[in-house]
Amino acid sequence: MPDDQRGSYFEQLYRQDADPWLVRQRWYEERKRALLLASLPQQRYRHAYEPGCGNGELTVELARRCERLLAADLSAEALRLARQRLQDAEQDAHVTLAQHRLPQDWPRIPPGAGKFDLIVFSEIAYYLSPEELARVVEHSIASLAPGGSIVACHWRAPFAQRIISTVRVHAVFQDAHGLHRVLRHEETDFLLEIWSNDARSVAQREGFA
Image 1 (cartoon, rainbow, N blue to C red):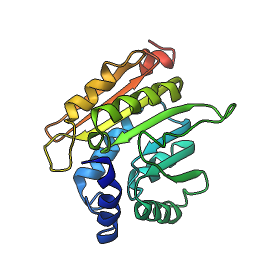
Image 2 (cartoon, helix red, strand yellow):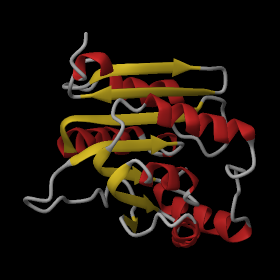
Image 3 (cartoon, rainbow, N blue to C red):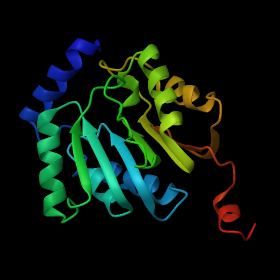
């Protein structure tokens, strides 16, 4: 999908339906979120970034694990829905919502503010062009705190708005210098992978392996 069409596409989508992919209703989506959350290498995170937060269903669960969370989306309507979802769950106090277009609006971290120790790409990176994805991966690595993790979770089947295959999206992260894959979970429907700039396993990080 061309960059100049994405904004209007997603804005119209969320104005027509507050839950266009039924992420609040389908067991598939609930299970996928649970797998993603259970796969995170750390129990708690200091500062996380979730671009493409949509209506906030995953955002709420990430907020329960993070001291601070920046959640962003291209659609103003999606952000309104996410804000309401966070308020309903009483998880809004430590979450900042922002309208971001990637890679142009990748957040600039002020000096002394600390980098992200968690960055989550859930069902978003396949909308980017190869050039945009390359810049997003570069920004992710530069913004990642020591020991931090980058999560990518994406639907595998073809669809009209997809620009890059899920396999290719994940390969760009896998091939990036300085990242080590710490988890890969593959199913017929989706691919979940996590990379870190710390090659140690969860057990090694906790000091018993």
